[in-house]
Image (cartoon, rainbow, N blue to C red):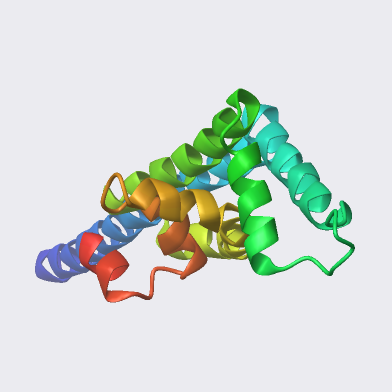
Amino acid sequence: MLEQIERVAKIAGVIVAIFGIWKYFDLAHQATVDKSLGYFDEFHSGSVFDARVAVGQMSYAWRSVPREDGLPLTAEDITKRALVDFGTVPGVIHYDLIVEFFDRIKKCIEQDSCDKSTAIELFADEARALQVFLTPKIIERQQLRERHAAGLLCMADRYQSQECAADL
């Protein structure tokens, strides 16, 4: 009888240990999801949100002001207008806030502090839209520094490029 109680206690101990290990990893994963959700809150408030609104307003202005000669706007016209706006003090600040935000998310994912799949679901579409608006400035800065705006570019690509996957 004592042997049966001992066997049952061992089995119960193993079950409790397995549950404890599972719970530990579940809580660890939830912490990374929560950290990703924290970035989501930051993205939709404060200075990052203000920068996104300002970039949207600038991009609208690039397309809404006609050319002096009356011809339709070209991609080159819009690129020139974007570089002018992103060359001003407020434009540079808005640009840097957005790029730095995505660089911080990338670092968080690389350090396994943020959940990659949650972050991609929350930010990839927005990153892709912002990439379109910010590309002229990104290209300009990449000529000065390799891998500039890597966080934004990787998120816009959903971390599928070889270069982004290699960072993880």
